[in-house]
Structures are given as structure tokens and as C-alpha cells.
Length: 306
Length: 266
Image (cartoon, rainbow over the protein chains, first blue to last red):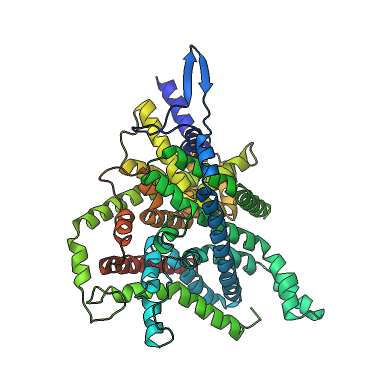
């Protein structure tokens, strides 16, 4: 009995548990669920709960058949709504990423140039909005953009416009919301890579007669490239599947795939089609995801060699 | 730094911070407005805060959220720390990069996908094994732990990678059990990363709408779910009052944590 107990306790306290516990958790609650989504995306809609038909069936003893039903994908393929919304999501996410880069890069560059005393405070101010509620930050923009909102009231009072502009419930508002919410995700990796730049290199370039713009283009941008990629992927990938921002700011005309998936699931209760949309979104995201992981790994290898 | 900040960069930084903070300030200002209108100022009032205190649905959901966030953050720190330890300290074992990807993927995965897939898992498990019985706080805790674990893993991994290893090695050489070394030496050394990881996980869990909406059951609505259903139909100053309370609370705790860490370092 004691021997057995010793065996159990040595197993529990062995370093092996550091691998089994967290990765067992990830396998069960992150990886396996994807295969279930894949499975259900091939099954058909049934009344009842759960609203999908079985995929694996025992035909005879020990003979397992897999029924693949492509009708959900055919449905998505024939209804142009879905493909259009996929493209629109990509476009909106891309615009948001470019916006974040255009605002975030000069900010991160400025941050890397400020004195260390100020830098701590300024960096904290970049992170602070990230800690407050995402939902409430999106909500703040409703008050600013709505027809009776902040901007329209201001412009009307100043006599610049005669009737309120339609700002809310537009694609523009969605892009703005994405830029606003994801900006810290862009600034932080950019700052991390800009801060590491050895500025004797830029001085050398200046000494060799380069103009400031040339130095920026040929020295600073290539050296901060890992930050640009990491930041862009951190903004692009989650915003393709964004639900809250297009739902609250985009109105009914902005069709993003995350919103469509949500509606298929919660309004139409069509779980198989929702699953097919998830798979479709994943296919669209595989390339950016691979790029992100590649850079993540390179970063880690860099840390290892230190 | 020898180079001075150019005026262009200064102005840009100013505008950038304005962009980040002006929306938040408008939220706060209009929470004290006497009128229901969001843009017309009609005098100072605390009526929305009073209304907030009487909203039992909101308070119950806030209590749900706090319970979920506490459990999820604690679990995420435990699992994330173990995951990071395995990645950094176990050398180059087979499948390490696979584990690395598995550990950080939830960070970038769109939440609608993670939410849907977890719900389908829970439904499948319940059908085949009878667990979990129905959905509620437990399933939300599991979902949030899965997401927050990724953030903790990255934080702790960075901290472990830059840490001196000599102390651990000395203890191992003197014959200490690896678990004892981990508890007595490694953990205290990485404690700042554990604290910030816990706080980050707590904040993320408190904030999440999408995952919770997918895996919640009847009676387990979280605070973001209640907020979402009320702002879907437009502006409500009561939500502004709630936002002000949340923002103040978060700002105070982040500044306090930053100050404590700053003091410790110097």
C-alpha cells in the first residue's frame, strides 16, 4: 500500500506533470473542439438539441462509417452573401490593420525616443485602455458617432454641416472601432522591436551621407520588421472574426463573418452552418496564423540563444 | 538617448493619446448628466449611480463575473506557469514547437471560433459522458481558463527565459528535489510575472462577452452579457455610470501595481 502511494506521489511530483496538465487541458479544450466543429460542419440540420445529425454510425458490428455531408458548404458556396461577407471581413480587418500601423508606428517610434523616466508612464498609458472593458470602449463610440452624438452636435453648432452626418452604422465606424480597440496590440510589439535597435547604426548611415528619410526607409523599417509583422498579425487575425465591433458600430449593412456566424448560431440555431462558417474563417486565416507562429518561434529561438 | 524628440513626434504622440483617451472621458462625463440625452448637458446628477445600485440583475451578473474571473485567473496562472516551465526548462524535447503553438494559439484565434468549438465540445461530452451537466459558471470558467492560459504562458515564458539559472542549478547540485527547487527558488523569482499574469487573466475574464455567450447556461449571465443586451438598444446613462466605476477601479489598481513594481525594482 505504501509502495503504491509512493509511486503515485512520485508521479504527481515528477516534472512530467508540467507537460501533462497544461497540454492535456489545451488538447481537450482547444484542439479537440476544432475537430468536433469540423465534424459537425459536415453533418445535417436536425430538429431538437443538439440540432445536428450523427456523423459516425455503426452500420454493422465493428464497421464504422463516416457520413460526409457537403450540403452546408454547398449552401455557403451558392449563397453569395457568405463569400461576400468573407471578403468584406478581410477588407475591413486589413484597413483596420493599416490604420493601426499608420497611427501606431509613429507613436511607438516616439515612445522609443522619449527619456526612460517618461517612457514607463507613457507605456502604461498605452496599456491602460486595454485593461478596461472592451465592450465599454466600443460603446463610447456610439455616443460619439450617433446622429445626435458628440461629433454631429459639435459640427452642427459650428455651422459646418446643416444636417447630421451618418457616421454610426457604417463600415467606416467599424474600421474606426477596430483601430481604436486594437491599437495597443500594434504599439507594444512595435515598441519592443524599435527599442532594441542599435542607434549607432542610424548614426553610421547619417555619417555616410544618408538623408533622414533614407535612414528611416533603409535602416529603421527593416530593423523593426519583426515588430511590424507581429503587430499586424495580432490586429489582423482577431479582427477578421470580430463580432462586437461590427454588431455595435457597423449596423445591418456591414456583413462580417463573425457576425454572420453569431446570427446563424443564436438566431437561426443552425449549428452545422455556423460550424462550416468557422471552418471557412479558419481557412482564410491559416496563412496569417502560420506567419505569426513563424515569427513567434523565431523570437523564442532568439531568447534561447541569449 | 542622445536624439531629442522632434516636435512632429511630440504632436503625434499627443494626438495618439487623445485618440485613446477622449472616448473614455466622454463616457465618464456623461455618467454625471442629469438628462437621459448623451450629448446635452443638463446639470450634475448622481441619479444614474443610484439606479445602478438598484439594478439587481446587473449586480447578480457582476457577482457571477467576479466568481468566474477569480477561478479562471487562478487556474490559468497554475496551468500557464506549468506550460511555460515545460517549454523553457525541458530542453529541446520532441514536439516542443507543437506545444508552443498549442499554448499560444488561443491568443489570436477569433473568439467566435473558440466559443463555438467549446460549446460543441461541452454538448458532445454531456451527451456521451453525462458531464458537464448543463452549462453554467463551470463551463464559462473552463472557457476563460483556456483563453487566459495563453497570456500567462507568454508572460511567464519570457520571464523564465531571461532569468539566471545558476540558483536553480546550485540547488539541484546540492540534491534538492526538482519540485522543491521549483517551489522554493523558481516560483519566488518569477512571482512578478505570476502577479501580472493573474491580474491580466482576471481582467480578460471579467471583460469577455463572446466566449461566455456561447458556453453560458440559464442563470449564469455575466456582466458583459447584461451590458451587451442593454447597449444593443442604444445609449443608457446607467451603463456610463457603470463604465465610470469600472474604469476608475481598473485605473487605480493598474497604477498601484505599476507603482509597487517600480518601487521594488529600484
